[in-house]
Image 1 (cartoon, rainbow, N blue to C red):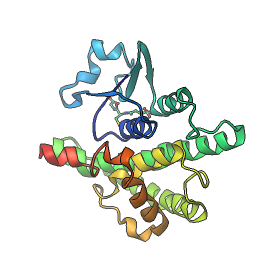
Image 2 (image 1 turned 135 degrees about the vertical axis):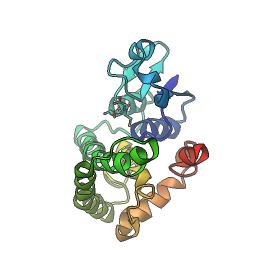
Image 3 (image 1 turned 180 degrees about the vertical axis):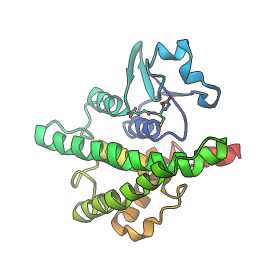
Image 4 (image 1 turned 180 degrees about the horizontal axis):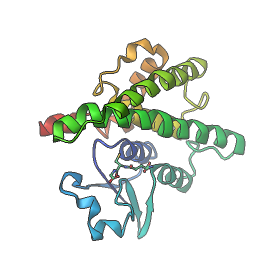
Length: 212
Ligand SMILES: N[C@@H](CCC(=O)N[C@@H](CS)C(=O)NCC(=O)O)C(=O)O
């Protein structure tokens, strides 16, 4: 099994967290996006839009991190994706909320505040401000939810927790003060102490810092 991706990409981190949590043995293939490897014809055979992550499982190729996580959990017959349709729908609800709203906002801020200045790309101030406003709106929602239950979709850990963890992993890197979201902070500290996170990296940006 192979996961193609970039170490600092949240959707890639999400799939690695889930694969690790499921105890799967896989090879992580770094895609050199700085050199445009994801836009080569060779890579586009795996992902027609030239994005990461991609999963390759014994010749079966799959893209979109949410689909990859559900496939892996179902393949392993794991409760991380419950079988009961209502419980499953709640896991989907929070996984989508984390990816679309939190992930979308973090992505805007990360791109404009960290990556664009570092790479010499143009900063889009409007997009940056919009991302910050979205975070002010959406982080309190997951914080409140984590005050109601131990995990995001209830009292059992699920794919929704890995989706949220991957998308709130870069909050220090974008200088968001997580201490004002105490439930989120406590949950994230506990999630980061788990083996499946430590197997991905010790902290978000470890790889970025290693590159300077
Ligand atoms: N919805 C997709 C998002 C994938 C995505 O946009 N990945 C980014 C990195 S975080 C990417 O590959 N960007 C390169 C590009 O769009 O050219 C998923 O969850 O897999």
